[in-house]
Length: 114
Length: 114
Image 1 (cartoon, rainbow over the protein chains, first blue to last red):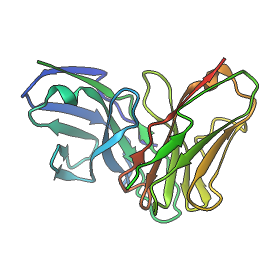
Image 2 (cartoon, each protein chain N blue to C red):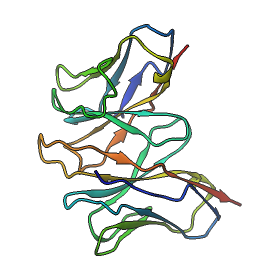
Image 3 (cartoon, rainbow over the protein chains, first blue to last red):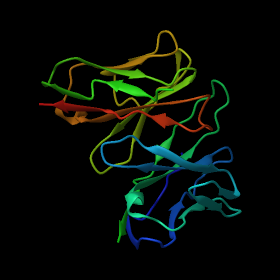
Image 4 (cartoon, chains in turn orange, purple):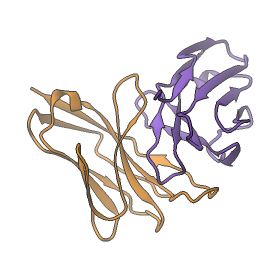
C-alpha cells in the first residue's frame, strides 16, 4: 500500500504562491494522486487529481514527475481563506467492484498570514 | 442539489453502548465511503461500498464495527459495545463511481464515548 509523507506545517503570506510536496515512494501503477483541503469542523473538499505530468484547474496545479514518487500541489496567490489542512491521497483506480484502500497522508497545515 | 448529509452531527454515549451513524449520499452516487478521523490526524479509511455491497471493508478495526447499505443509497455505520477509543469524527463520502473519482464528504458525526 502506498504511503505518503508531507510537511507537517507551512506558513505563507497573502498573494504568495505555495507549493506543498508529498512523497509516495511505493505508489502503484494504478494509483491516482488526489489532494483535498479541510477546514476545521468540515469534511475534506476535493482540490485536484492527477496521474502523471501536470494538471491544472481553476484553483490549483498538480505537478507529478515521471517516476511518480512525489507530487507537488501549487496554490497560486494564496489568501487568508486558504488557511486549512491539505491532504495528499494515493489510491487505487476503481473499476466497478475492484477493491482498494485509500490512504490519506497526515496532512499539511497551511497558515496564510496577512 | 444537496450534498452528503450525516446524522446526528454529535453523539455522546457511554462505554458499552450501541450506536448507529447515518449517511445520506448524493443522489445517484454509487460509491460510498466511511472514514474515521481523530484529532490532528488525517481521515482513516474504514469501508467502501459499491452499490449495496461492501467492496472493501479492510479498514474496519474489529468486529464491533459494521456498516450496511441495503438499498444502495443511505448507509448506516454501527458500532457495538463502544469504547472510549472509538471517540472520533466519523466521515462519510460518496462518489459517482469509484476510487478514481472525486469524493464528496459530509460534515461528519462527532462521536464521544464517555
